[in-house]
Length: 87
Image (cartoon, rainbow, N blue to C red):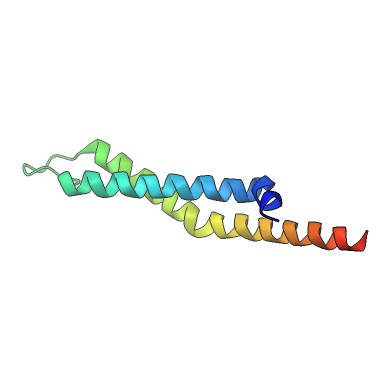
């Protein structure tokens, strides 16, 4: 069953998305602990804002797309298991 689960493209996609999110979250927290979005003189750190936007996009993806990918994978695995029982 574990091999069949890993062969699922939806489940592999979910794992990749989760890994990217965790990496982005780690990079963002390290970056923001060193410096913020604004410098002391008030100028904007554009790279920090771009990194924050990318982190926000991955967070929204994990929040809304990841559950759908996992649900698709589970349903497909259930259908495959049920069709094997019928044969």
